[in-house]
Length: 269
Image (tube, rainbow, N blue to C red; front, side, top):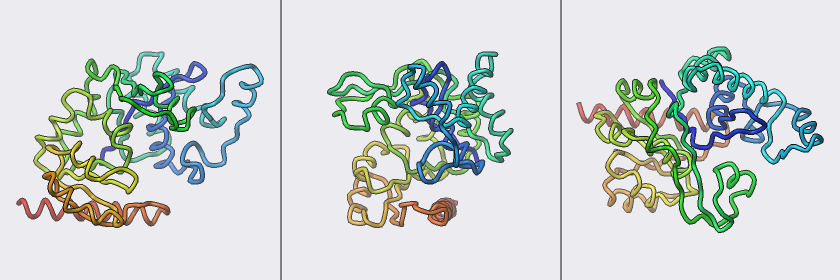
């Protein structure tokens, strides 16, 4: 299993390269994840951030003291000339993670939102402004000049099944698809292609976005009434519980989706 992660919300804080999505995946699979906050390291303290605040730094983006170690080490390795892919591979290996966590690209891509409060980065919009400004448009700056990271390209070639995990389709998935060649590679993939969706975004709207490169869209049970509308967009709909409040919920959803992929593959063979 290869895990490809969005880097469109990477940003520099206090001179450090912070990769929020890579970090969340890394902390989750290494057992360091804080389930109460949904980000950062469990049991982390904030003395470093508090001292930075006393020194006059802007500290609206919360970084724990142990979390700082990840960003310091990443920035150090990048400054030595390593790619983000190689740095991520080294950091995750040091934490004992078995499956590769892969940045979507080694070139910088930034998710930028045009809002009624001006142009905001993903973190400025989502964290600093608490997603309150009205969004007029979204741009993935640098995507047209980027390319899939080498490990991402290899994973696409080798994959038997592609699963687009439940996440914001415009802020977390679309930046990956904006990298040249990715959407076409998924569209031409011959194995099962499954997208999962929770209940917070219109399933029909997402089906339209994913039309042409997705075989099945997994809907939450409370969106079962939208299954026919999704199918009308040319994507099969599968209905199951997708809201993950516990580790058991996560395991059960993963098992159901993998079983769905296996069934789809068997029907094709």
